[in-house]
Image (cartoon, rainbow, N blue to C red):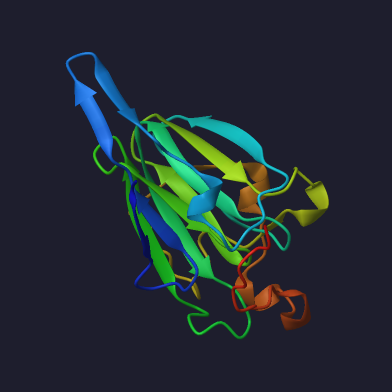
Length: 188
């Protein structure tokens, strides 16, 4: 079983350090079990794959009805997290974590925590969500918002037109921001 720890900065974000078993042929590791995250029901599971060239930045995105669980299948990314949740004990805190080839781990991202990543190499990100895709639950905040001051560590990333036009934090009305809800364990 991997080691699962809570982020030292953002409440509810969980970091999963994988146990990798390798030899000269390659490696094997278990990357996800729904039992690792008992606070979610995981009744609707969707798995997605994002392949990006080095220097691509995706985010910052957030949801009201979906958690994300990320793991890198190849390459290295710098994952970026920002707690948007009104009333959260860690509201307004940012964190970056490098994951991938040399840091084999997954990241559980709760509802209301904005997330994105920049690829440090060509990379393939696999992510599992606990609800089917719904375009009405896709929100964003500017990746380069000076109020957030995310330490991306790259000068001129490649950003999609959608992500380039996400609003700044100050332009998102408080009444439509995600709210912090204390975690409850899912019923079996």
